[in-house]
Image (cartoon, rainbow, N blue to C red; front, side, top):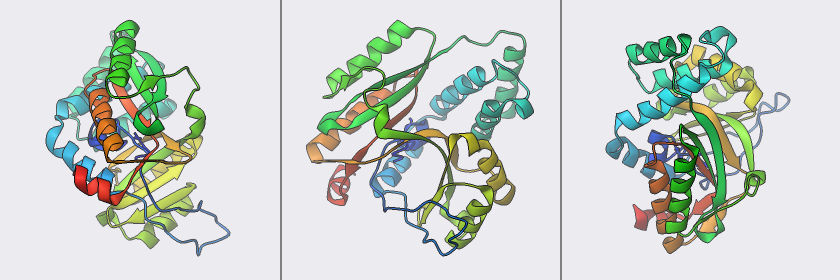
Length: 287
């Protein structure tokens, strides 16, 4: 669930803690431009995201987070268990370490993959609409396509949404790499200079943290460059960033959150991205 609001997923949602990413309201920012070092560092993390992140940290079990990370490691290791030649595996390993997954758990997954014993998960993407005309992209990994499709469709139908065809909403999003650091890792100016050197497209910094965005093809290089300076990020991965946000009222927001909860509770769902915008007043009431 990035609208992260990347943002499963939200991501960013409790979303952040469990992998959901949602499109949330934020200040407008400009791309990093080497010819313009005076570019302003804009604020980025919404209050809603932070509220949901705290909720996730409190309510979501580590086992659920680890389960999603193990699936990603399993799929990433299919082609090779050598991180140096497998960018996706490098990214998955970074995410697992950032979540403090025990080393033994990671090694167990890789050994199973080497022996051809890993689970055979299919990667599926669902697209649809939620309350208030919001768009959602649901990324899943499953060993039973029929089960997952049925459960995802049921969640949409129950909470005022509807599944669409492939491509029905993804054109409203951009696929990007996203790297998030806590605010206390460094100040905005230092982060800006590091992001500039790393080759990222954008950075948004405020009192809640630093969010770095880059092209998908540059993701591993940017993440690794930043890790050498600041250590492992709080979150990182590829996500769907909404091009525009859709405002929802209190009733729509309440139902939408129930939909996101239902998707988050589905073990086959890896990430959810959306493009909703919730006002501060509504956020306060829902909190």
